[in-house]
Length: 378
Image 1: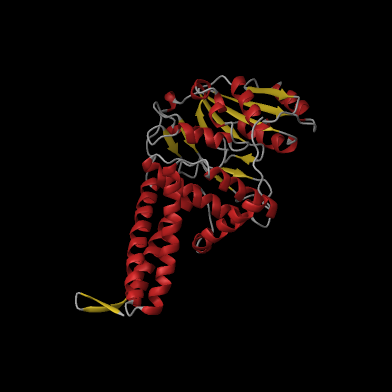
Image 2: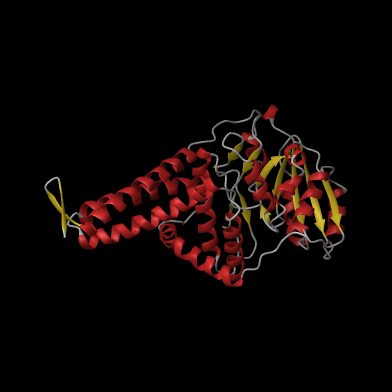
């Protein structure tokens, strides 16, 4: 059976394929335009005299050696007003002695200690760190994070202007050991760019709990994590998800502000990371879910309709040209984004990963249905 359109004969399969292909192409083009807008955003800068006071909060449990390596680089930051607050969360590896020794020569290093296990260790540790802090903005790091140089903090705060309450920075896995580093890098990078694209609609969608910042006053005003205590993980991401809007949120996109994560990236870490991300997305609002789902569905629809048209349509070469244009256009801007965020050696494997991402996520979702256990706060 054929359909006559403007004097041209099309089969039912061809019409369906062309409609789906055209719709998916337009949707993906809109996402790319939003990505380009994000890449070119963020040119406003604070003058050095207006830089806010900063408290860097680090929670640590038995990470004495990573802390010993990280703290000197943070204490050496070229910044007029900052402090570092380390929360020793029930460590038994000598962390308290190392911190006590370091405090002797650094007056802007504060420490506090949790000595008893609780049902909500991460939320408690962060809250104690906030209470111990005294500055305007709070930035969260892990003992397994590393900063670029002594200008990192000054570069990070350039966009923490009046009216802003949330900042989301990038974290890469370039220096992390393990066989699954590439998968984590792809997932992290893709999610961050999607968050950046969603910023035009106020859809912040933070990826990680580190290299995030918000105002201490906002945390205290909302009684900390009281609004998100139904989840035993990702308290910082969920808190930001509650308070972040299009106008009050900054998503950083330059190569001077990312941090490096040096933790293991073996198979268990990948599985736990995927589980955490999928569980976190269940907490997103309707707009965030729609924005992410539309991106995945339209990408799958574009690939499926492209393959269908290559088989059944005499217009296959036109379709191939349009598809190639979109892919090349995407590769160009992803290459620009990798440079701005300090990533490297991503293409073309990243595009292959994005094609199979829905299948990967589906596998983890099915696994969670059978093996996942819901935990609730006591």
